[in-house]
Structures are given as structure tokens and as C-alpha cells.
Image (cartoon, rainbow, N blue to C red; front, side, top):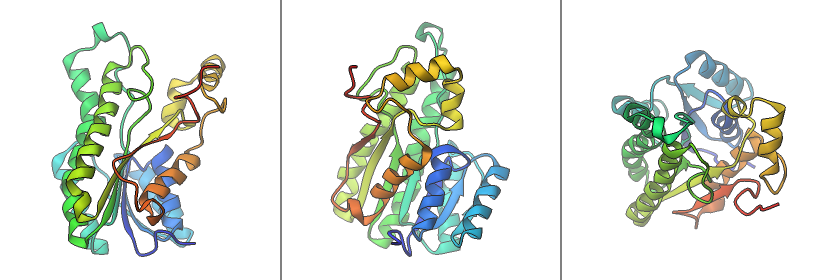
Length: 254
């Protein structure tokens, strides 16, 4: 079943982890993919994997925090494939972890730029391209952190991810009448390079896994399946949602 047949999709933060897995899944489901991240060699490897498997993918490396690049990325999709139907704004960083009293303004702003401002800039240029086609699915990666759970020493990260949910809801109401669905995906701990940088000892891994009702972390491929749901017509009446894909961490107390 090719649930994204003839669709054109942008995936940011595609060089590893959730973005990498989602790009491959979207392509397998029939979408033409534009992948982006800052690491060109990683993108080239991903594009080769997708194309060798019979999919269609191209890459444009750049920094999603830069407004000129956000605009150029959409133009790249239009020039090569003729439009845009899906955007998975997944790029982000888990930076500025530590005592809030020690966080300086530059660190705070860097975190918000990486996680929230980049999402806004992506949407600013993706929405007109979707409107031109009469429909679209806009997806942001948020987090249960700052939504259903608070963790110490994550003030900037939590604020940036909570802000994405507000952005999602505002855009869903603004562009819903025009056929654009806007949703936020809220993963739990996922076994990715970013996740492993944080859970870097057996003791930390065990502690994190015990927080979850399922007593384990997710794979990137599991999160990608939920991104596919939001991208496809399977979620045709879903908009403005904060979709928890968190292994039950939000409700677990055991």
C-alpha cells in the first residue's frame, strides 16, 4: 500500500534518527522526498539508500534556522517536483541542559532558534506551497517534555517544545478552512544518536526506561510510523493535535 503515492514531502533533520527513518518510510510509501540537514555526506547516504530501494529522493543541505534557507528549501521542492504536500519539521536540538540559573541569554536563544523558530520559518514558506495545491499536512516534532511532564534543568528545551504545540494549534485554526492539517508529534525517549548522547551509561538507560509504561525506549522506525499516520489520509480528520507517541511515560507512575 502506497499511502503517500504522488505526494511531495520535505523532511528536516533527516541526517539521522527519526528524520532518517521517516524519510525512508515516506519514500517507501510512494512520496517524493526532499531531505535536509546540515551534514551533506549523511544526506547523500540517505538519498542513495532511498533511490537504490526504488524510491525518489533529493537532498539540500542547510540550516533550518536561516530564513533564506527555509525559503530556498521550498523553492527547491517546487523546482524539482512541482509543489509540496507534506512537511515534517523534525529538526531540533536538545541543548542547554543544566541549572537554569547558569543559562545565559545566548544559550536560551540558540535553543529556541533550533527548536521553535526553525519550525515557524519552515511553516512560513511551506504553507503557501501547500495552499497552492489546495491541501497539505504540516507536522512538527515537539515532546512530552514541557507538555505532560516537567524535568529539572530543561527550561529552554521545555519552553521551545511547548511553544511548538501553541504554534501547531494556531496554524491549524488559521489554515484548516483552506485544507491544511497541522499536527505536532510528541515522541518519548527514542534510540537515536541524540538520545544515546543523553542516555550514555547503562544506569542512565535503565533509569529512563523505567519511567515508561512499556519499560523501554522507542526505535526511530516506530516514531516514523506515527509521522506517516499524520502525513497520510489516514489522519484526514486530525488537526491541531499533540499526538503522544511516548510509550506511556505521560501516565506511568510505577
